[in-house]
Length: 160
Image (cartoon, rainbow, N blue to C red):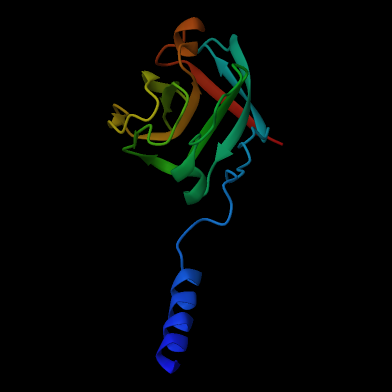
């Protein structure tokens, strides 16, 4: 009788350790929303305005590492500006980035150096600047062609 009692207790203990989820409901995650932190103007060297954008800044290491990752959309009037303390060789990639982008590399004089156009979502290929850059602007894919941006065009920006 004692062995049956011990066996019964053992079975109860084993069944209580069953590895099954307690809920079948999906985990809720909140969508990352755009936060306007400033405005950026794209201009011709003559000073003529090409386009005005609302921008988010990526300044801290964490902001620069995550950038626009996991975002499902971005308006054509929005962008993200990465600011580095000084010009340096830079290369971006699209890991965990869900929307196609134009990546614009900009020097310390706020002049456009080069573009990586139509960067594909989730692609981990290296997308480098052709010269040291201090700023990088990410906008929706196709906009740099639509706005006829060229190397030598300039940016200026203000923080809120």
